[in-house]
Image 1 (cartoon, rainbow, N blue to C red):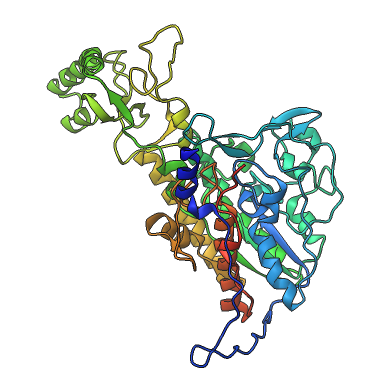
Image 2 (cartoon, rainbow, N blue to C red):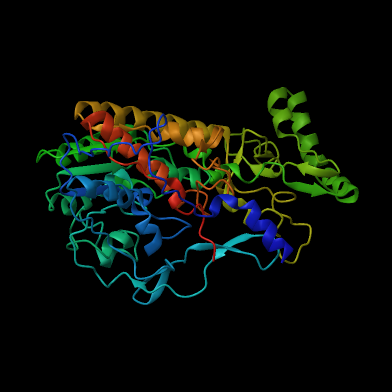
Length: 500
């Protein structure tokens, strides 16, 4: 019981609280005159939201009803209602579990919850079988047209919602259950509703999928054919610019106005900041054993340096050494190191991680496990280097940074060209990571995993409280561009984390 009480005290950010105090004049205590809300020059009678999981309400590694209700577009429509906003229809999932099936076969798991059974809270999927069957196509139209997993060019792709293509990875299961026809496109279904106002937040997955795969994809800069891209690749900046321009040209063609948002630095989210580069504790005997095992590798590097075949700088980067006690860095494979196997097959591209490397959140499931269950010495991250998919090296981070900068330059320039509102989501996510955002009760919302309150248990998607912060960014952008006056969203009215 004491563990539970301590935990709930520690997770104080997760408790919902709100205040309904009337506004008063600070001088006389008299009620302030009511605020006159207005949409300004924006016509909010038919609002359509486009984007990916961040807009759909995907959280805790799944899409489920409560998360969809707490999506930022649904939040802001509550403010729109005060100034003539129309109905906002959501393609709701069938339950709050989040799992989905295709022909009865599960193809995506349930949402995550904190499991307290071990005494140390651990994220795990909630029990049960999700009842959302992809072949049960919903009847639209829908105002929330955001599709989890979509990249920018997917919004233009006919057939992206064809149920027959889901099993082959040619179509998206979330769009398949709501598309108007097998050959429909997301933008086509959105425009069929003749929207008067839109939000567009797309492009995150054009770089995020590369990042979450540990950089195992390909930077496709120079390749203008997205049909040849792999799922974990970075989109060419010219492809992104052409797609984004086409989307805005289409969305504004009937006179609609809207707000667009840029792409956050994905390396600052909890998925990349939670697992340290040096989580390995060692006793003296194991330390001696490991240092002895790596002596031949270290010696081989030093021999090549003596022959002038590699630099002392690279040798220093690659030498592997452990010390007794906590704080030992994991051993990783690094494809950007010089390939030395032609000189010695045992000199593979491995080194120990540094604080400049970012380990993925999922790497904790492999570090310390056995690569060979029958060999107790084959410890992943120690005796066996971690594969590329578990780590973002500085070189991979630079590719991500360059792509993000290119995409964001395009988004901001086109927002100005089309006279749209602009949300700098990148700046706000940086504040969450660096200092946090204070709330009215004195608490501070941060990007710290689980306890920070801004992100869900998957380490990528915002919590409902984090979505409220995003909702306010869109409302602020509307005020700046269209002169609207709308009530802000109180993050404290939403959960920082779902606790079962």
